[in-house]
Length: 144
Image (cartoon, rainbow, N blue to C red; front, side, top):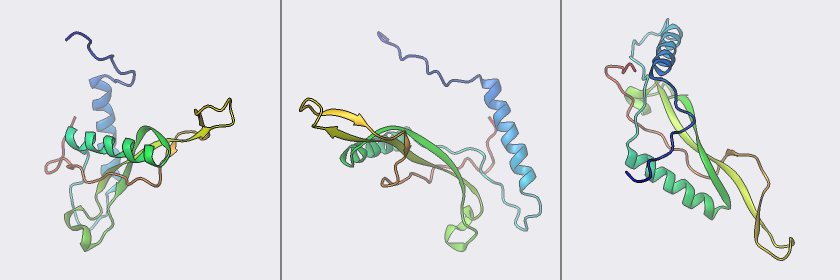
């Protein structure tokens, strides 16, 4: 490879990742006590590269159309409602993605140019749809 990609600054060790997963599993197991239905909850969510690339393309393209500089994706944990409409996922953990960015405005008054001025700190972009419904890694639960 001529130009290998730069090593991301957010990488963690495999050992620390394993400890994070163990901590999550212990905390989640402790919070499930007393439930009448014993369902094994998700402890991992998987999205295909194609789905992630498609979502990134969607948020960048539509974000730009709405005047945003899309700068990231925030990952939120959630729990499906306890109702029949959600079938086997009812009451279980999910992970959904929300685009973040800054509203960009053109400033024509500044030397009659179209310089971009960012007026907000990165925030969730409420006008773009979040992404959900990854594969929840069960059964059985995955352990890192």
